[in-house]
Image 1 (cartoon, rainbow, N blue to C red):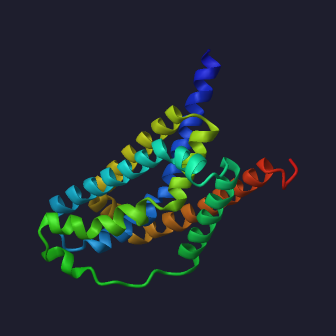
Image 2: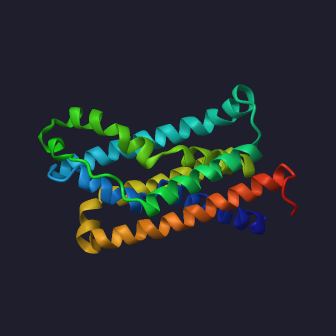
Length: 212
């Protein structure tokens, strides 16, 4: 019984780490800070809390409905989803790793009232910057590989970590600096590419296209 509990906790930890990796908070945090530069700290903290909560809701709803959508609407198997999700993770991570995103001017955000600011930043901050197609595919794979309760627990742990990270964004930026956050984000992208490759191999093996 103790071994089973230890195994479940280990699986929960690994699943939470995987979700944090694909959400890539260390990569998104510098972008979110840049996008809200000049916004007062209390407003920024409230905005980030709402962004994280919205992203959590998107992930939770997709977790509860994704298997139904996958099985009955699109009629794809978990192995096919692994291959598709792995490709998405690899392509998006390679793009972000090799090509810098185009500079955009967000200076007008600091003149907006909070409600208007939230409306204008919910897209793209919550989706697709924080939660993207790769994240949605990953949580479905975790749910199908393990069980939905472990996936829910992993999502809660991952978002509690991200909530804390974003709440103290200004302090973290002062302590680490934008360069350190940028380096962390590049390292995370390498691991996400490896996760995508692993998902593709697992999917191909499940379809019998690659021998074990």
